[in-house]
Image 1 (cartoon, rainbow, N blue to C red):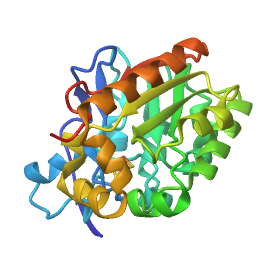
Image 2: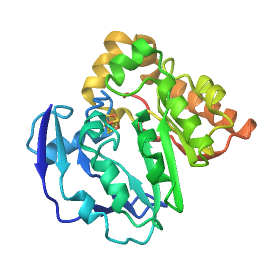
Image 3: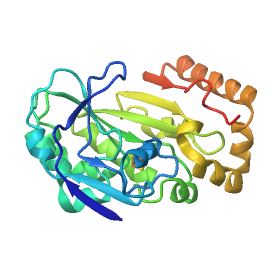
Image 4: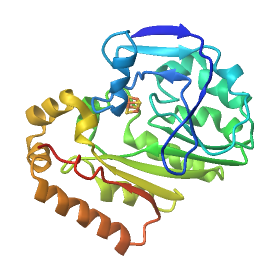
Length: 262
Ligand code: SF4
Protein backbone atom coordinates (compact mmCIF):
# COMPACT_ATOMS: atom_id res chain seq x y z
CA UNK A 1 0.00 0.00 0.00
CA UNK A 2 1.39 3.38 -1.06
CA UNK A 3 1.03 6.07 1.64
CA UNK A 4 1.01 9.66 0.40
CA UNK A 5 1.28 12.41 2.97
CA UNK A 6 0.08 15.85 2.01
CA UNK A 7 -1.38 19.01 3.44
CA UNK A 8 -4.77 20.31 2.43
CA UNK A 9 -6.44 23.73 2.52
CA UNK A 10 -9.71 22.69 4.04
CA UNK A 11 -11.05 19.55 5.67
CA UNK A 12 -14.83 20.14 5.74
CA UNK A 13 -16.41 19.70 2.31
CA UNK A 14 -19.91 20.94 1.50
CA UNK A 15 -22.20 18.16 0.30
CA UNK A 16 -25.47 18.00 -1.60
CA UNK A 17 -26.67 14.93 0.31
CA UNK A 18 -30.08 15.79 1.85
CA UNK A 19 -29.84 16.36 5.60
CA UNK A 20 -26.08 16.65 5.58
CA UNK A 21 -24.04 19.82 5.29
CA UNK A 22 -20.46 18.56 5.29
CA UNK A 23 -18.25 15.53 4.89
CA UNK A 24 -14.85 15.16 6.47
CA UNK A 25 -12.17 12.90 4.99
CA UNK A 26 -8.87 12.95 6.80
CA UNK A 27 -7.90 10.07 4.52
CA UNK A 28 -8.59 9.52 0.83
CA UNK A 29 -8.32 5.86 -0.07
CA UNK A 30 -8.94 2.87 2.10
CA UNK A 31 -7.04 -0.19 3.21
CA UNK A 32 -10.23 -2.20 3.66
CA UNK A 33 -10.17 -2.70 -0.12
CA UNK A 34 -13.83 -3.57 -0.58
CA UNK A 35 -14.22 -4.66 -4.20
CA UNK A 36 -17.49 -2.75 -4.59
CA UNK A 37 -16.16 0.52 -3.10
CA UNK A 38 -18.22 3.42 -4.52
CA UNK A 39 -15.33 5.81 -3.93
CA UNK A 40 -13.24 4.11 -6.62
CA UNK A 41 -13.95 7.12 -8.91
CA UNK A 42 -11.41 9.05 -6.81
CA UNK A 43 -8.64 7.31 -8.74
CA UNK A 44 -9.59 9.45 -11.73
CA UNK A 45 -8.89 12.62 -9.74
CA UNK A 46 -5.67 11.46 -8.15
CA UNK A 47 -2.71 10.09 -10.07
CA UNK A 48 -1.53 7.54 -7.58
CA UNK A 49 -2.66 4.39 -9.39
CA UNK A 50 -5.45 1.88 -9.01
CA UNK A 51 -8.01 2.39 -6.24
CA UNK A 52 -7.19 0.29 -3.20
CA UNK A 53 -3.42 0.52 -3.69
CA UNK A 54 -2.85 3.92 -2.09
CA UNK A 55 -3.96 6.05 0.83
CA UNK A 56 -3.62 9.79 0.99
CA UNK A 57 -3.07 11.06 4.52
CA UNK A 58 -4.01 14.69 5.15
CA UNK A 59 -1.38 15.46 7.73
CA UNK A 60 -2.80 18.83 8.79
CA UNK A 61 -6.37 17.49 9.20
CA UNK A 62 -6.26 17.72 13.02
CA UNK A 63 -5.43 21.46 12.89
CA UNK A 64 -8.06 22.18 10.22
CA UNK A 65 -10.69 20.22 12.14
CA UNK A 66 -10.74 23.01 14.76
CA UNK A 67 -12.84 25.16 12.40
CA UNK A 68 -16.44 25.53 13.60
CA UNK A 69 -19.08 24.53 11.05
CA UNK A 70 -22.86 24.82 11.12
CA UNK A 71 -24.74 21.69 10.17
CA UNK A 72 -24.27 17.95 10.30
CA UNK A 73 -20.90 16.49 9.39
CA UNK A 74 -20.47 12.97 8.05
CA UNK A 75 -17.21 11.07 8.59
CA UNK A 76 -16.25 9.81 5.98
CA UNK A 77 -17.23 9.46 2.31
CA UNK A 78 -14.08 8.43 0.41
CA UNK A 79 -12.34 6.43 3.11
CA UNK A 80 -13.01 4.59 6.33
CA UNK A 81 -11.93 6.61 9.38
CA UNK A 82 -10.94 3.38 11.18
CA UNK A 83 -9.14 1.59 8.37
CA UNK A 84 -6.02 -0.42 9.38
CA UNK A 85 -3.56 2.50 9.01
CA UNK A 86 -5.49 4.43 11.67
CA UNK A 87 -4.37 1.98 14.33
CA UNK A 88 -0.80 3.13 13.79
CA UNK A 89 -1.05 6.87 13.05
CA UNK A 90 -4.18 7.86 15.03
CA UNK A 91 -5.16 10.59 12.58
CA UNK A 92 -8.91 10.16 13.13
CA UNK A 93 -8.39 10.24 16.88
CA UNK A 94 -6.50 13.53 16.64
CA UNK A 95 -9.19 15.00 14.36
CA UNK A 96 -11.91 14.06 16.86
CA UNK A 97 -9.90 15.50 19.73
CA UNK A 98 -9.74 18.87 18.00
CA UNK A 99 -13.29 19.08 16.65
CA UNK A 100 -15.81 21.37 18.31
CA UNK A 101 -17.83 19.03 20.55
CA UNK A 102 -21.07 20.88 19.66
CA UNK A 103 -20.73 19.70 16.06
CA UNK A 104 -23.45 17.32 14.96
CA UNK A 105 -21.41 14.38 13.76
CA UNK A 106 -22.07 10.94 12.34
CA UNK A 107 -19.29 8.39 11.97
CA UNK A 108 -19.51 5.30 9.78
CA UNK A 109 -17.01 2.44 9.76
CA UNK A 110 -16.49 -1.23 9.03
CA UNK A 111 -14.01 -1.63 11.88
CA UNK A 112 -14.30 -2.20 15.59
CA UNK A 113 -11.23 0.01 16.01
CA UNK A 114 -13.80 2.75 16.60
CA UNK A 115 -14.11 1.39 20.16
CA UNK A 116 -10.65 2.75 20.92
CA UNK A 117 -12.06 6.30 20.74
CA UNK A 118 -15.14 5.89 22.93
CA UNK A 119 -13.66 8.33 25.44
CA UNK A 120 -13.61 11.16 22.85
CA UNK A 121 -16.85 10.13 21.14
CA UNK A 122 -18.66 10.53 24.45
CA UNK A 123 -17.56 14.17 24.67
CA UNK A 124 -19.67 15.11 21.61
CA UNK A 125 -23.12 16.45 22.43
CA UNK A 126 -24.78 15.19 19.27
CA UNK A 127 -23.10 12.20 17.72
CA UNK A 128 -24.15 8.93 16.14
CA UNK A 129 -21.84 6.06 15.31
CA UNK A 130 -22.69 3.47 12.69
CA UNK A 131 -21.17 0.17 11.66
CA UNK A 132 -21.82 -1.39 8.29
CA UNK A 133 -23.21 -4.86 8.84
CA UNK A 134 -24.31 -7.15 6.01
CA UNK A 135 -23.72 -10.59 7.53
CA UNK A 136 -21.97 -11.83 4.41
CA UNK A 137 -20.76 -15.35 5.24
CA UNK A 138 -17.07 -15.10 6.23
CA UNK A 139 -15.81 -16.69 3.01
CA UNK A 140 -17.81 -14.11 1.03
CA UNK A 141 -16.69 -11.26 3.28
CA UNK A 142 -13.06 -12.23 2.68
CA UNK A 143 -13.59 -11.81 -1.06
CA UNK A 144 -15.72 -8.67 -1.04
CA UNK A 145 -14.35 -6.81 2.02
CA UNK A 146 -10.96 -8.50 2.57
CA UNK A 147 -9.48 -6.23 5.22
CA UNK A 148 -12.52 -5.04 7.16
CA UNK A 149 -13.49 -6.45 10.56
CA UNK A 150 -15.68 -9.55 10.51
CA UNK A 151 -19.42 -8.93 10.84
CA UNK A 152 -19.30 -10.55 14.24
CA UNK A 153 -16.82 -7.95 15.49
CA UNK A 154 -18.84 -5.11 13.98
CA UNK A 155 -21.97 -6.33 15.76
CA UNK A 156 -20.07 -6.60 19.03
CA UNK A 157 -18.82 -3.05 18.50
CA UNK A 158 -22.39 -1.79 18.04
CA UNK A 159 -23.41 -3.50 21.26
CA UNK A 160 -20.51 -1.98 23.17
CA UNK A 161 -21.21 1.53 21.83
CA UNK A 162 -24.86 1.13 22.74
CA UNK A 163 -24.01 -0.05 26.24
CA UNK A 164 -21.89 3.09 26.65
CA UNK A 165 -24.96 5.23 25.93
CA UNK A 166 -23.82 6.30 22.45
CA UNK A 167 -26.42 6.71 19.72
CA UNK A 168 -25.79 3.97 17.17
CA UNK A 169 -27.01 2.97 13.76
CA UNK A 170 -26.60 -0.06 11.60
CA UNK A 171 -25.89 0.47 7.92
CA UNK A 172 -27.05 -2.62 6.05
CA UNK A 173 -25.04 -2.38 2.85
CA UNK A 174 -24.54 -3.36 0.15
CA UNK A 175 -27.68 -5.47 -0.14
CA UNK A 176 -26.96 -8.16 -2.74
CA UNK A 177 -29.59 -10.88 -3.26
CA UNK A 178 -28.48 -14.28 -1.99
CA UNK A 179 -25.42 -12.82 -0.23
CA UNK A 180 -26.61 -10.16 2.23
CA UNK A 181 -28.38 -11.72 5.19
CA UNK A 182 -30.73 -8.84 6.07
CA UNK A 183 -32.87 -10.85 8.49
CA UNK A 184 -29.80 -12.13 10.28
CA UNK A 185 -28.50 -8.56 10.63
CA UNK A 186 -31.80 -7.49 12.16
CA UNK A 187 -31.96 -10.53 14.40
CA UNK A 188 -28.49 -9.81 15.79
CA UNK A 189 -28.76 -6.06 16.17
CA UNK A 190 -32.36 -5.18 17.08
CA UNK A 191 -32.53 -3.45 20.41
CA UNK A 192 -28.89 -2.41 20.29
CA UNK A 193 -29.12 0.25 17.61
CA UNK A 194 -31.23 3.38 17.44
CA UNK A 195 -31.96 3.13 13.75
CA UNK A 196 -31.12 1.43 10.47
CA UNK A 197 -30.11 2.64 7.04
CA UNK A 198 -30.37 0.11 4.25
CA UNK A 199 -28.81 0.36 0.83
CA UNK A 200 -29.28 -1.85 -2.20
CA UNK A 201 -26.09 -2.39 -4.23
CA UNK A 202 -25.49 0.34 -6.78
CA UNK A 203 -24.31 -1.76 -9.72
CA UNK A 204 -22.95 1.23 -11.59
CA UNK A 205 -20.80 2.57 -8.77
CA UNK A 206 -19.76 -0.96 -7.79
CA UNK A 207 -17.55 -1.09 -10.86
CA UNK A 208 -16.42 -3.68 -13.41
CA UNK A 209 -14.32 -5.70 -10.98
CA UNK A 210 -17.33 -6.41 -8.79
CA UNK A 211 -19.41 -7.39 -11.82
CA UNK A 212 -16.77 -9.91 -12.86
CA UNK A 213 -16.49 -11.37 -9.35
CA UNK A 214 -20.25 -11.76 -9.14
CA UNK A 215 -20.36 -13.40 -12.55
CA UNK A 216 -17.52 -15.80 -11.74
CA UNK A 217 -18.10 -16.62 -8.09
CA UNK A 218 -21.68 -15.70 -7.17
CA UNK A 219 -23.67 -16.57 -10.27
CA UNK A 220 -26.97 -16.91 -8.41
CA UNK A 221 -26.68 -13.34 -7.13
CA UNK A 222 -25.59 -12.14 -10.54
CA UNK A 223 -28.60 -13.78 -12.20
CA UNK A 224 -30.83 -11.87 -9.80
CA UNK A 225 -29.05 -8.61 -10.49
CA UNK A 226 -29.47 -9.15 -14.23
CA UNK A 227 -33.22 -9.37 -13.91
CA UNK A 228 -34.95 -6.03 -13.47
CA UNK A 229 -38.34 -7.54 -12.56
CA UNK A 230 -36.85 -9.82 -9.96
CA UNK A 231 -34.92 -6.94 -8.45
CA UNK A 232 -38.01 -4.73 -8.30
CA UNK A 233 -39.89 -7.46 -6.46
CA UNK A 234 -36.94 -8.09 -4.17
CA UNK A 235 -36.71 -4.41 -3.20
CA UNK A 236 -40.46 -4.15 -2.64
CA UNK A 237 -40.52 -7.22 -0.39
CA UNK A 238 -37.68 -5.79 1.65
CA UNK A 239 -39.40 -2.42 2.02
CA UNK A 240 -42.61 -4.12 3.10
CA UNK A 241 -40.75 -6.22 5.63
CA UNK A 242 -39.28 -3.14 7.31
CA UNK A 243 -42.66 -1.43 7.36
CA UNK A 244 -44.65 -4.42 8.62
CA UNK A 245 -42.19 -5.04 11.41
CA UNK A 246 -41.94 -1.41 12.51
CA UNK A 247 -38.18 -1.38 12.14
CA UNK A 248 -36.77 2.10 12.78
CA UNK A 249 -35.52 3.06 9.36
CA UNK A 250 -33.75 6.36 8.72
CA UNK A 251 -33.32 5.76 4.99
CA UNK A 252 -33.91 3.11 2.36
CA UNK A 253 -31.46 3.78 -0.45
CA UNK A 254 -32.58 1.81 -3.46
CA UNK A 255 -30.63 3.46 -6.32
CA UNK A 256 -33.66 3.21 -8.52
CA UNK A 257 -32.66 2.13 -12.05
CA UNK A 258 -29.11 1.36 -10.93
CA UNK A 259 -29.78 -1.63 -8.73
CA UNK A 260 -29.59 -4.16 -11.54
CA UNK A 261 -27.24 -4.89 -14.43
CA UNK A 262 -28.61 -4.03 -17.86
S1 SF4 B 1 -14.65 0.55 3.94
FE1 SF4 B 1 -15.80 1.97 2.69
S2 SF4 B 1 -14.28 3.40 1.86
FE2 SF4 B 1 -13.18 1.59 2.62
S3 SF4 B 1 -12.93 0.31 0.79
FE3 SF4 B 1 -14.77 -0.36 1.91
S4 SF4 B 1 -16.46 0.75 0.92
FE4 SF4 B 1 -14.55 1.79 0.36
